[in-house]
Amino acid sequence: MALTLRSSTSFINLKDNRSFKTSEDFSTMVGFPQIKPSTQLRAKHSTHEVHIPVLERVDQNEKLHGMEIPHDHKGLRVPVFVMLPLDTISIGGNLNKTRAMNASLMALKSAGIEGVMVDAWWGLVEKDGPLNYNWEGYAELVNMVEKHGLKLQVVMSFHQCGGNVGDSCSIPLPPWVLEEISKNPDLVYTDRSGRRNPEYISLGCDSLPVLRGRTPIQAYSDYMKSFRERFKNYMGKVIVEIQVGMGPCGELRYPSYPESNGTWRFPGIGEFQCYDKYMRASLAASAEAIGKDEWGQGGPVDAGQYNQFPEETGFFRRDGTWNNDYGNFFLEWYSGKLLDHGEKILGAAKGIFQGSGAKLSGKVAGIHWHYNTRSHAAELTAGYYNTRHHDGYLPIAQMMGKHGVVLNFTCMEMRDGEQPEYAKCSPEGLVRQVKMATRTAGTELAGENALERYDSGSYSQVLATSRSDSGNGLSAFTYLRMNKQLFEAENWRNLVEFVKSMSEGGRNKRLSEMDSSRTDLYVGFIKEKNVKEMNKVALV
Image 1: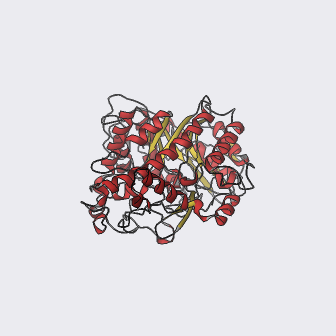
Image 2: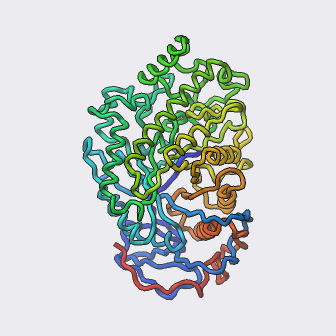
């Protein structure tokens, strides 16, 4: 199923002793004996061994796994980051499985990875009460990342974890926020049938003091100020990027396709999320301002339901009402509210982090299903006014560029030919459009993969989209996600060769001849003669 949401697993023990096993309880020492051609470290445990790949770069002409890589004539290096598990920090606010994390970071560093990304969950850090922040688990992670010579991207995650594709744990909004929501359910997004979505606070109340005297924007700002103060000595050195969450899954969008309880299934068009009292009041005021009171009574009545297709609705069908005066009014208002929301949060973030040395970024969802239709229904319900006649991504790119914010976009690994025909998908066309929008706006572009992929084809596609042949090239790529599968033998070899190719601007034209047998043949840029005989290192 082709979605654009994050997917992850927590640390889980592996059965295959040829790959890296994460465990809750490693010994405190890792021995590095003479390494065999399989190039792995052994972390001894009382009952089993943990094998960690250790790599060293060699000649760029060496190969791994036969994928053709387009040539990047500009030769620009694209740093690669890896997302950490969603539950990197425990519910209690501590760093989870520190020994396993330490070993994992060591392996990533050896592969040439630039750094890692972690979610700083609002629901964990400020869970004990307003303005009561606990950053201790994150402080431990920052120190560990620094020790390994890696960099850190930190996501200001003001959304709930749980209920979307791949969410392996549940982290709700802070309890005191949920208490306010229970008193006033209109604080969260609501669909036409009255279904409330607790993933994220409705942007309709951004500027209202609904959180115990503070507005949501003030609460987000206080959180970011606390982070900067706590980690001021690491900003720009270890912490090189702050990604500002602006909606569900941390993305600037409405929660129009919620998976929880089977509400939505791919490739449904989703539903507009404009029925809380604050959004309804805003719509009514906008309609009144142009003398069209009847347009302010609610969202389109003919927009269908979550799992319908565009042609099954009056609004989204080829000649639907999306393309008349009313449709234009509503979509301008709906997408405009989302842009205003991004403007408020990113404006606040710019004021807080300016001069810190860390970049700011914002994430936009890669909603590629129904892209090859006139109305682009799934994008419209998410808040992106992108149709056959209207560019929905240029205004977003311009808004982010205004604040010097990097636009982070997903589905960089997807190919049109992999998608089901009936869904009218075009991830490649969507990526091209976003690349052109960011180039036009003068906005920096970074990317992620949308789904967990380990195959050579997906890496080859990322390498192709990272180039600047059409639109912006990528300034960085963040790989989703670190888990047990990533450290399995063939997956690991594919990753390290991909990282090498990205560091060379895609100049490594082939990613190898098939060699999955773990023999004495060369594997990518790993060879027995090039593996360091390392001293013992303590895992803490």
